[in-house]
Length: 230
Image (tube, rainbow, N blue to C red; front, side, top):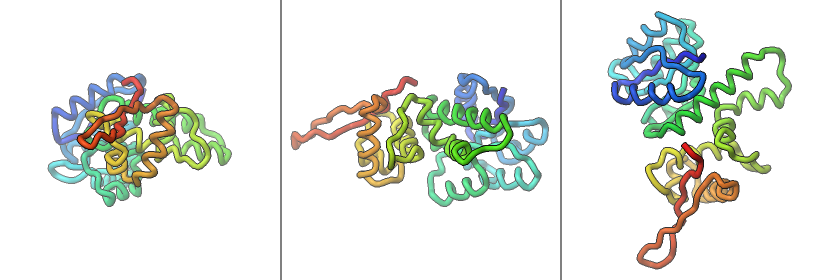
């Protein structure tokens, strides 16, 4: 069982995230915290495997929490779960060792994908021993590629990145309704052409549903939704 600490300054959001975690097999929330100080206190009290960490906290930010964890020698894994989407914060989280970054708002499927990918990575690491290059590549790509494959997407053809496909998938799953290719590109931080290329691939695989919306000009706009069950 993977023991999880949920850290969010909003008590209601913390409860929602806790409920999400409880629905994923193999995970359990053992504590909540609503500030940086409380989070560090919870970790000192007991062993925590994974922290779902908000960035915006009332006393310090999430990056400060991660720095302090490492300074104190805690190797607890971290997934950032936050509305902070500026590139500087994302880059800093990566450099501090956060394994994944989940941008608010998101739905249960978005959380489940991250947790299942994390569990798959842990199973690989727990086997120990030595790894060939192909196995190392799978470990480093687990949290992006596994999130896509867990939803039933086929292996990507040559020239396509699992990480990019996962960004498109996440943009769709976080949306409240159908999105255009331009909206997906903006949400995922890529060009419209790249978004369209991956959308066509995922549509052919049956993971993305395409609908048409007709405007005043009569020319239909392509709108996309994630077709996987949640």
